[in-house]
Each structure stands twice: as structure tokens, then as C-alpha cells.
Length: 564
Image 1 (cartoon, one colour):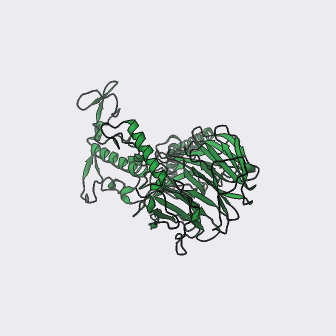
Image 2 (cartoon, rainbow, N blue to C red):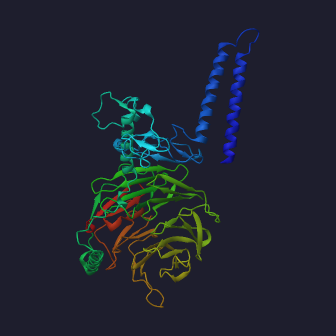
Image 3 (cartoon, helix red, strand yellow):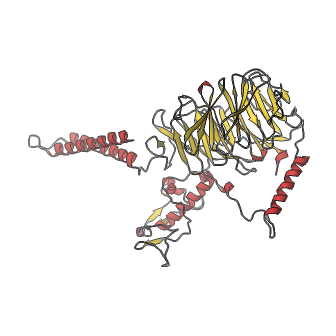
């Protein structure tokens, strides 16, 4: 940063000196006559170019650029405008991707994005001496603006003159020329900003209505009894999924509004989103992270982020925090705060020499990220301090990692064919056993009751998640329905469905009914357009099942058994 600042300052000083020299040469007579008009125009053009360069450098160092649309290594991603396609190696960290978003849902422009987010009904205030005074004369020491420009009321702006301001119309029928005062323009910009933030960074799923579900006279004990009775009803079979036949319906593709241009390497549902319309992210080798609001009839794109320097191999939500970890075959990775629109660039993990961080998983609480490192190391990274915290060691190369549903244990396996289990508090290996298949393990998934281990031979072994005796572990069931190496396994929210997939064959996906340990026979069929499955995930409460394939599509299916 200091080197860039000193270099830029020296460049600006050189431009100023050059401009002064040109002015002196222009004024100095030559042979009693002024310079030729051709040379004078050339000097003027050079002077204008130098002024533009100086303005650009000033905006780059000190901010205030009006046309800055992408964040670079030297400038933070504060403003967003029309997205451009930066060149590789240009220093751009990310850019906003608006492909597939309707005009009414576009991200607000630079001017609106700089609004402070106050309610449009807030009264403007006048600056008092040492305090803020509202129009009615009352003290307003908090909750209002600290300063108001009195000339705003006299300013008139025609919002139909430019395309940028046309987005501030209250309706599409507002086509007649209308001049707005500065106060009205500010209110419309605030409304536009608030509307856009609700669409692009929804946080209403995290708000809890204190009156929701409560009646007069209810007590905490009554609610506890009610919750216990519901859990008993579910455990008694009221919500038990029927085997053999799965009631599943295809919905429009989740990324139909903006399909990926490459393989969809990652799909992930936000664990804290609304079960009926959950938030889904997709990412892949086209270097773009996209967010969608999923629905049975239509899935709407919320927004997207393009990373010019990072083909994305792994992307997932960090628990219910709203943050997303994005990594690939690079020594750096990103943590993106979807709610605040903030991007943290982690250049490398201090203390480690890995050149690729393409494989990672996050803990259920979002506090820890586990990376597959070199030489059999599992690297634990703290998301709050942004620092490395510990290493866990395998005898072979790391191929797969997963956390237990509560996050108290972490499982890993790899080329040696053994499964390792560590306690997250003590960081000690509490269990190690050999997978019965004998080949290298390539996929792990854990539910509250079961552990699924996929191997390169295509066998998926189902174990009990808790070791019941000192005897060597034996699988409860070995699933042999897939003939190629397993790459992905996933339990649904209640652990009744296990999804298994391979990337080595077309339609390489099977779903198993875990209580009866039988594979569903009716789905998928030979006509199911799965193509090659690369990623998959179940939504909260398992109402939806998303599948990313090699065609850039994110297929979406509705499990009708899990309707509200």
C-alpha cells in the first residue's frame, strides 16, 4: 500500500511538472511569433490527457471515483455500477453480476448505494450549534442526519433524462417529464435502496416475531411440552418416509434465469432460510457465484459475484451467518458477507505452504473451515480471527472431510482407506477404523445416527455414527448400485434419505431410504435428465433437492413428503 501510494504520488508530481513546462513553452515566443496552432492543439490534448490521468490516480488513491464499478486490490468494493468484463491479471477481485435479474430487481446505482438507509419518512433537519434540530424545533440528537444542504429544496432534477434516473420512477406509467426537488429525489433514492437491499440481501429470515406462535396465558413450560410432544410424534412414525417409492416432482431449474457457463461445482442451501422458499447458491468454473430464491413455480435470481482470478471449486454457506466461503486451485480464497456485501480476501493461510485450497468444508456453526492440505494435513481455519488454528494429521492424502451435525466432531479420510474421527475441543483423534471396502475413501457424510463412507470402487458403506462396542466396526449395509468411484454423499435434514453420486457415469445418482436401507426404485429413471452429477444438496427440512451437473444447470426437485 505504501509502495503504491509513493509511486502514484511521484507520477502525479511528474504530470504537474510536465503540464507547467508545456504552459511555459506555449507562452514563450519563438522568433517573435507564437507557436503554430497545430503544436498548440497537440499540447492541449496532451494536457487534457494528463488531467484525466491525474484525476484517475487521485480517485484510485483517495476514493470518490464516480465510475468505479469493480473492486481491486487497492480499492475496497464500496460502490457498484454497471458490470464490466475485466481482463485476467488486471487486479480486479470481483464484480457484480446482474445477468438474469429483472429491471425492477436491479441493484441500485452508485448514488442510491451511498444512501445511509434511513426511512424515507424521516424529517429533514437543520444544523444547530452542537446539535441536530428538526423542522418542528425539537431536539434530535440521534436518529437524524447531522447536516442538510438547504439548496436541495431548490434543486430540480428530471428523472426521465437518463436511464439511471428512470429507475427511480414510482411506476412504469410515469413517462411524462417531471422535475423532482432535491428532497423528493432523496426520498426516492432511499426507497430504491431499501427495496434493492430487501431483494439482494434478504435478512428477514433471521427476524423472529416475538408474538409468533404465542397466546395469552402460554408459558415457557407449555412451549417445551408442545415441542417435546411434536418430537415424540415424529419419532413414533407420523413423519416417517415410505420406502421403495419416492414422491418427487421436478421443478423449473433453480438457475434457469442465469445458467452457468461451465460445470456447476457447488450448490448449497442456506441452513437458516425459509423452508418453503430457501436461498440457494451455485458456483463453478465460470468464476461466478450466484444466489437464487427457490420456488416450486419459479426461482428468482437475487444477485451474482464474478471472481476474475478464481475458477470456483468449492463454495458453501458458513452455517446460518450469511457468509460464504469461496475457494479454488489457488493459495488464496474469499469469505463473502452476502448481507453486507463485503468481501474478505484471504491471500494465504499463514504458516502453510499450500498452493491449492480447492477442497474445504465448514462447520455447522460457521466458525471453522477445514481445508484439505498437503501431506495428509487437515487445516483448521477460524472465520472470526481469519487465522489458522490447528492441523489434524492423516497417514494418507486427504480426500474427504465432514463435520458431525452438531459440530462436536470432524471426520476425514483419504488414500489409506481409514476413517479418522477427532474431537473438535481437544483436537484429539478419538477413533480410527478401516473402511471395509479396502480402497481409498472419496466421500463422507454424517447424520445424527449414521455415517456413510463412499470409496473409489463405487461401494458406499453405511455405519452407525456412534461406536457401540470395542469390536471392529462393520457396516450396517453396503450399497453396490453405482459402478464407478463415489464423489459425493449427502444426508437430508432428518437423515431418512441418503444421496450418492459419481462423476464417472451419466445419471450416476441414487437415493437410499435409510431406515430400511433400500434404494428407491422409481427415481431416478433412464429418462431423468441428470447428465453428469457434480454437486447436490438438500434444502432445510428437505422440501427441495438441488443437483448441479456438467451442462451448467442446477436441477431442482420437490420432495412432496416434506411439504409443510
